[in-house]
Length: 159
Image (cartoon, rainbow, N blue to C red; front, side, top):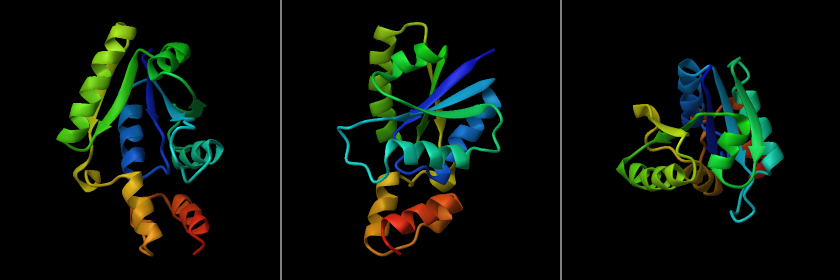
């Protein structure tokens, strides 16, 4: 049985994140989505909200569970018994950053592999930061996030 973790801040979960989780669920026996509880980042949603939003978005994926974590991602992977860290790649810029993190992770946990899934063409431009910027400027992102996430964003931006 191969278990993988899919870590991120997911502030909020997008259709791109959900696409990566869905594809990972087809590749691995179990996928643990790790919502990073990071106090260093300025986030729109609390950790509890982000876990809830992703859990609801992934509710149809029977082999996916969503939990919060702190600390190093490799430690989270080892703690869950995962042998694989899944990361989505949108662009060459993402690859450079992920490559560096992968090399560091390999020095700390040689037995944990990193698997990169290239984003679907429809989501290669999509980032949670961009969504929040569009919402802050009065735009709509309903077509880029699950419906319940769009509702949560409207509440946060009081629309």
